[in-house]
Length: 293
Image 1 (cartoon, rainbow, N blue to C red):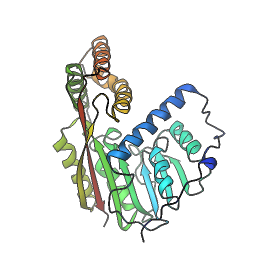
Image 2: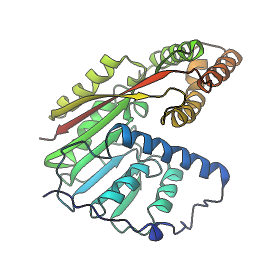
Image 3: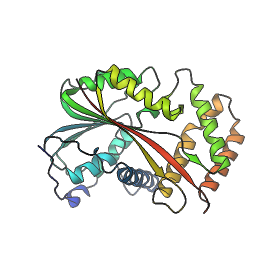
Image 4: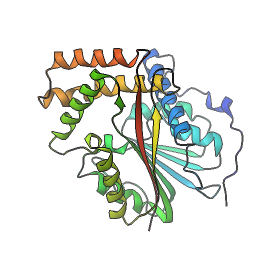
């Protein structure tokens, strides 16, 4: 049975969580950034669910590494009858999610880190498992095992919807140099990381992990996101790049790719060039929809 579309109750969701304070400017800015990113991705991927996906009206949906619940929020706006479960390793993000999903009795949120524990979910429960940017969360040797455990939590014939992004291609010399250094730093990590690979390697590794888990890939799509200055996705990209550059700094410096001061100067130059009127770039996303055994 296809999902019905209904209006959401935004007033119910405006209730404040007792453990999270939306008046905190830094936290509010972070959640706003992620909400903007989600809206851009939602447009690029043509909605929160892949085209043609047919689910029961009260299907169980799991979102892994859900962050502050932005994808769950957009999904619930369109499909309020779904029963949603969000899992993330960050208690802070889950506090944000509780705030934005307040008033919904169809949502369950729990703290868990897939890098240290994979078999925490019930067997055969979910109709859909949603994975996004999981390669940034897990090292190479853990990712296939994690995907396999997530598939075990699926009902027979359930779907796994997985999207990964890659480093952008731009006309900025500083951005290209910084991207190369970031990839070198990621690839020098003892356990490796899918994020630092090429487009072909990321796509191949996604397919490998799904096939290893017994899944059958039924959709395999590449999406191109125009992140050039003046385009709708530009501001969200710059904000996301700023955060990613800060997060990956220790990997590059500790791997000996660049010294700390050199990295900081290059990062500042790259961010400045991203904001210039002549900045052009594209970002590639890979999405796969697979059916669980």
